[in-house]
Length: 237
Image (cartoon, rainbow, N blue to C red; front, side, top):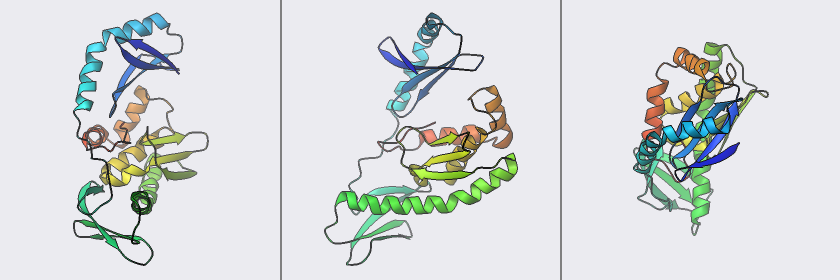
């Protein structure tokens, strides 16, 4: 992947086996990427970028204004999200193994006395991971039947740059741990997005056609996901 600078904006350029130039601006940081056909020369790419500067800046301003979650300290009274719903955190110190329980609109975080912020974060993130892993198999099974594809494996991990990835050769998808905080429909959208890559590698018109066919509401889910409050490590499709 190459990088060019146009009007003080850094733009990643990737050449693919596609027919047309595609421009994307990704929240939350406003990262810009151009996907270009393999034979496109550098000058044509630069001229295309110049013609889109106004559009790029408008989108970057939108992302800059997007609501952000405050840095978490994992203390009682903080707001945390699970399945798209806002919960208040209640930290309870006890002399037993750490655990997390949902109680009405509160997340009760049981930790040992004197636990550090990092230790509290680890306990809560492990709980998020467990909850997410409980939701995923049913969704994958549903879409394997609907799309007539088969995954060999799926995993959850913390990712700073993507909501999900697909290793097409291995038929494996990875899902961002932070999806546990988002509505289930957003999780399902990302699962479908990654599984469609088993049918179409590139984000081209064929890919969009598959998304329209299998998950017609994908654009509204994408918009919803991108408009939700994001953490400092979130990145949106």
